[in-house]
Length: 78
Image (tube, rainbow, N blue to C red; front, side, top):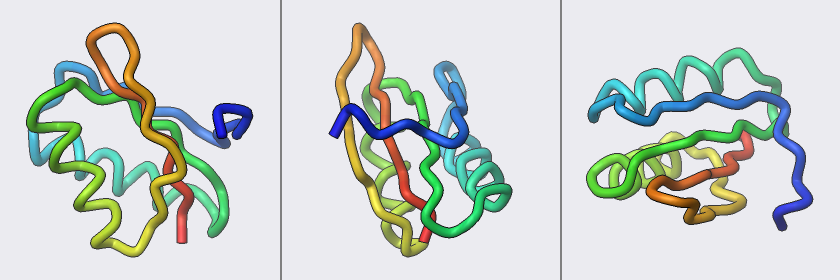
């Protein structure tokens, strides 16, 4: 799955909940259906809450990858 190339990327390390979800949602709104957004999030509350909220909005989580101290998500816009 890591060969999926994102159409856009947003680095939200250091951004607290729920602002990180709001920024993710706004960035997704700039994409067309089917396009992929890469979201970089801190561990803890951000990685627990943002993917759940993204799914509730109807989008698809394609990949969650743990990096060194943070997470990299690939989200496909519905």
